[in-house]
Amino acid sequence: MKILVCISHVPDTTTKIKFVGGNQFDKTGVQWIINPWDELALTRALELKESSAGKIDNVTVVNVGQAETEPTIRKALAIGADNAIRVNSLPKDAYGVAYQIAEAVKDKGFDLIFAGIESSDFNGVSIGGMLAELLDMQSVSAVSGVELDGDKFKIKRDIDGGYELLSVAAPLVAIVQKGIAIVPRIPNMRGIMTAKTKPLAAVEGVAVDCVSEIIAYEMPKPKPPVKLVQSAGELINLLHNEAKAI
Amino acid sequence: MVLIYTQNWDGKFKKLSYELVSYGVALAKQLSTEAVALSVGNVSQDELKTLGKYGAAKVVSVNDSKLDVFDNKIYSKLISQVAENFGAKVFVFAHNNEGKALAPRLAGKFKAAVVSGVSHLPKSVVPFIISKPVFTGKAYADIKINSEVKVLTLFQNSYGVHENSVQTTVEELNIEIATPSIKIIDKQRATGKVLLTDAEIVVSGGRGMKSPDNWAPLEQLAEVLGAATACSRPVSDEGWRPHAEHVGQTGKIIAPNVYFALGISGAIQHLGGVSNSKCIVAINSDKEAPIFEAADYGIIGDVHKILPELIEEVKKLRA
Ligand SMILES: Cc1cc2nc3c(=O)[nH]c(=O)nc-3n(C[C@H](O)[C@H](O)[C@H](O)COP(=O)(O)OP(=O)(O)OC[C@H]3O[C@@H](n4cnc5c(N)ncnc54)[C@H](O)[C@@H]3O)c2cc1C
Ligand SMILES: Nc1ncnc2c1ncn2[C@@H]1O[C@H](COP(=O)(O)O)[C@@H](O)[C@H]1O
Image (cartoon, rainbow over all chains, first blue to last red; front, side):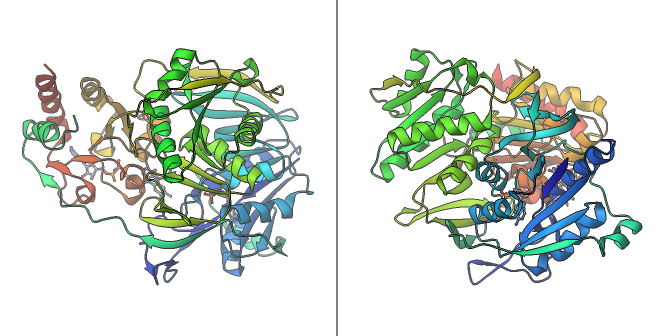
């Protein structure tokens, strides 16, 4: 069986966000990372492969991006992915990215495709579900656990106030969130060395219309300074009478 | 036409669905079109009619025992059939687990843009421009949608519930539903507690609480306030509190009316999950803690000393 992990290349979570010209994200000095969810998904994919007694024999990562994303992809290879696909195309909107991934992987026979619930840059919450639709595959979202169970997958899905354990046949798209793995794997020395020679295929993107575009950015309005009080009584009084919040 | 996907819990609507209807109806008005509210599952006529209080003139109900399993493929097919039936061009979902699972599938089906986590009506409808948070709340982007079909997910507790009573007609649709391909092996659901995502008041603890044994007063404060409890990531990573309580960029993103941050430093990743709260209250012994930059009200002091006092003050207020 084969697992695909979709990885998004995003600014480090502590990045100070700046814009130039009103509608361009300023990339100067930005550190790039694998989107935190995708890092956890990759970690889980590798664990599944290792504990499958050879049943899962491949973990591939895919990214839609231009050459600048290669260090991020190499990091995924260093963490342990077997090979990578980079669809050479500048991501413009979610539909375009999902379409590019679908075109690149549709006849490759992946049994399980992981996507994160959202990218920490544009918070699209889109790619996983769109990809499943474009590939006409089953999808399960809010996934916080995956196990191999014969030819099927046992999936833990979070619901309001609890969870469901599901049995889902391959192929499927699992859209993951907290819990899928607890600590992301980090590359070791051997991983970093072997990553250099692992296959990273750059394939050309296909033409696809843009269904949406960002026309402007705005920063949140600055908050008035905090009102500091001395006592619990004062605080509750303000929350009740001034903020009318309790 | 605007199609509003409502959600029910054991046949009952919560505030969430009334907010979705309030939003969808206002959006339809802005677009000079109609809104239709879709209900999936076993919901009584009387309950369906309550949507009319928020402006839903037409409610469509689909009920079939095969829908007891939330199968994304079946649900999205069903919604697209209803949409085609009524000529829906705009979809409104909740920005929660269910909405996040379905909205992108619909967008994929209709080659449409999905804008997730909106809290306001569009800035303009021709062209269609709507604002959404990006960089986990550090900025907002104005998105222009070019596709004819548009899919939106609405941030819970952002637009609010707006009463606007109308005459409601309920139509039961018979749609053939396929057998789900996924099977539920087990299901666990806590009942009786205020759900974090529904809560209007949230009391949250961080590492400054020092030990899991110190949570009793925090829970008691939540109880007297009718609030849900939450925590920072290290607290759930340490196993002090369940993972479901973790809020922040990598946990739940919430927007209650009041968020109490007790012994939480206010790291950027934490704020990403709570910065949309209408009012943030911080209690921290370190006056330099970044949480005070995000907070509306604060006390600099020892949380262990202040918590019991807060409980007493809320009790007095509620008495
Ligand atoms: C990729 C990534 C994603 C992350 N996602 C999240 C996320 O989703 N959510 C999240 O919360 N974090 C997240 N983090 C972690 C985040 O960076 C912080 O480490 C974390 O939020 C700190 O938690 P804390 O405030 O509980 O602990 P600390 O930072 O240790 O703060 C404890 C606070 O308690 C105060 N304190 C101590 N004693 C007392 C006392 N007696 N009375 C009052 N105050 C006291 C201290 O002054 C301090 O401000 C993420 C980090 C990364 C790298
Ligand atoms: N450019 C991309 N290339 C590959 N996968 C992506 C890309 N962008 C997003 N994804 C995947 O889709 C998930 C959700 O991202 P989004 O829908 O953009 O919020 C991410 O966690 C990734 O798994």
